[in-house]
Every structure is written in C-alpha cells, then in structure tokens.
View 1 (cartoon, one colour):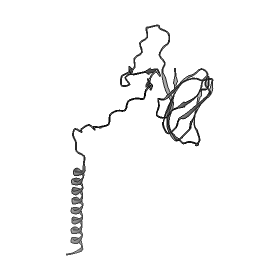
View 2: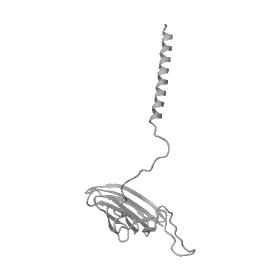
View 3: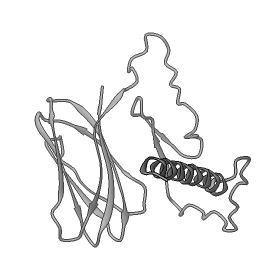
View 4: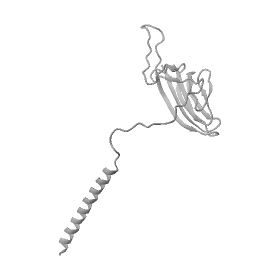
Length: 189
C-alpha cells in the first residue's frame, strides 16, 4: 500500500469513529431525558399552620395603592373600586420608585435609599423582613418623619408619607440579628 491509500483508510476510520460517537451520544441523550407526560402533584402530609391570632393580612393593590384588609380580599382576583360619576376622591394610582431586597447584619452599616421628592408628594413605603430580629425604619424628608420597627416574620409595615420637598431618605437598620429585608417605595398620584 502506498501513502495515499493509508491516508484514505485513516480518514475513513476516523469518519466511522466520529459517526459511532455521534450515534452513541444521541442514544445516551434520549435515555437520560426526563419522561414527558402528566406529572403527579406533590403531596405533603404536613397540615397548614394557622395564622397567629391578631394577625391582619393586608393586600396592597399594585395599580392604585389602596389597602384591602381581611379575609374578604382574594389576592387572586382583580380589585375593583366603584365610584359614582362626579364623586370626589378619584382612586389613587401608584408607581414603584424603588424596590430593595437586601441582607442586613446586626452592627453592620444601615441600608439607605434616597429619592428626590416634590413638596406635598405622597408616597407609600411597604417594608417587611425575615430573620432573627426586628428592623428599624427611619424616614427623613417627610411630614412627621416616622420611625417604625418591622418585626421579622410579621406583617409588613405600611407607611403613607407626605414629602416636605428635597430628598426623601429611608434608612433600614437590623436591631437584634441578621435580617433579609424586602422594601418598596411607591409614589401615589
């Protein structure tokens, strides 16, 4: 055999091996694929835990910022406000300015969020946390400049704020241990 024939044999052998590898890979891929079809629902033997006594669940409508209280509110249903035509007090609308999900540590630096605010601007701050201790919420640049504590694992704190103009600053501090914060500031119009 000459060199040219050897090269053809090697090329044919390599092509055959490559084809065999592709076929073996396709076979493995089909065997390892998950089964397609209906999937049974996961069943848990644990009973749902009842809500703590005195707990008030609150739903905040994302479009208009209204608060809906108690078991009559179904969070899966749209919220409809009926007003007679010409009635005073149009429903409020909200637009999220910022949302923050952060981990706060005890003794660590506070989380500070700022936004420019027009005098008389109305805002809704919703803040909740999960962790071992409460989170202190301090607000500067709003009438009354409230200071609140969000109990981790409890219902979220809802603050309606009226800006005095300039900068609206919100400061979150972990008091007794680490906490995962979930906070949203919306402007109401």
